[in-house]
Amino acid sequence: MKPNYSKLAEQNHADRRTVKKYFEHPETKRKIPERHSMLEPFDALIADKMAIPGVTMAGAYAFLAKEKVLPGKYVTFTWYCRKKGYAPKPEGTAHVRFETDPGHQVQVDWKEDLKLRSKDRKTVFVFNVYSATLGFSRKHFFYYSESKTEQDFMACTNRLLRKMGGSVDEILTDNMSAIVSVSGDGKDGRRRKHPGILQWEKDSGIAIRLCKVRSPQTKGKVESSNRFVDRLLAYDGEVENVADIEKAILAVQNEANDKINPDTGMSPQSLFEMKEKQALGKLPNMSLLDSFTDGGTNAKVPSTLLVTFLGRQYSVPLGYTGKSVRILRDGNSVRIYYNRQLIAEHPFDQDKKINYLHEHYRAGLASAMGGGCDDLDRLAEKNLKGFEGK
Picture 1: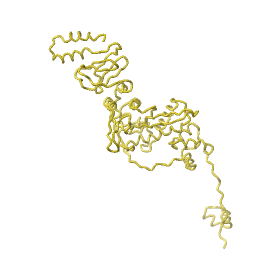
Picture 2: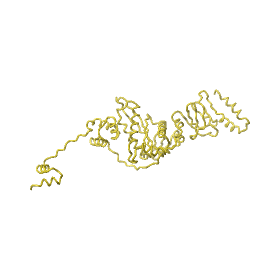
Picture 3: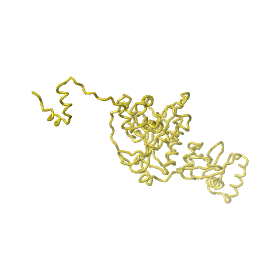
């Protein structure tokens, strides 16, 4: 029986002639035109970048769109990568979130042993990136570092404090070797902060808190920021020197801070300027903190009240015997601190080996003699002259 082609066409939103053709010739196959992506001409370039170990689609796209004027939006790029099989498999592990008050915490980590080849492929740059993220605003700070020693950690953290323009209550990090020594295995392992780190904490007034062993999600915000650092891998074969690498790091940092965060609904830079910047504490004594990386040292005060620094001896006031002080050179001065307080300052004299300040020597002399001398000032002056030229 002959069907009503017009009615079928109306029901199926098709042309009457099309309905008739498929009814009378069911073997007819519909011809689907082949689709060509606007990214096809860039296939070799995309494949090359996505083949870099550890690179992300976001990192590859950010580089290609900026440096190579790649057409299309990010969604087009991800669709193309998935279609071609270039997309990495996503991780399925879930972690709970936690929030911190403005100005309370910064999370710190190393992105280790990154490798970028030079444009001529003859040089391989191996380096680390110090990665820090403020807990409230999620503002990111990335710094180039050739190594990741205790000195590197303190130098980068000092640089971070200056850039923030203030301090936080605590720094959250993992058991990086620059900070702690770990003895034993598993949960029973003992973690001890290095003496220099303990002194830095004391002098900065900032606590360094260690996250639980094998629990990187505890500092999940900086772990997330490391995904931005992974975008540096897209610069493989695009750099010529360290200056180029630092320029790329800055570009990635700015991009991370300008991107809207889905949790806060604002960019990290905007939220930092609006709320977190005002909540930061006063900047510590940066000259004192810099001494941890430019030759400063700690010393325990002996009964002579003289501490040794750069082959010379300098006096401290009475009452600090047995206590640990921090000594640094600041220009033509030698400064001595205890608990972040300046307790003594001496002129730096390369020819003078023993440097007593008159008031320090007089107080020590009075203590040694039990106050039984009527002319302490004259005796102190006489004895001090004996140190001249020594």
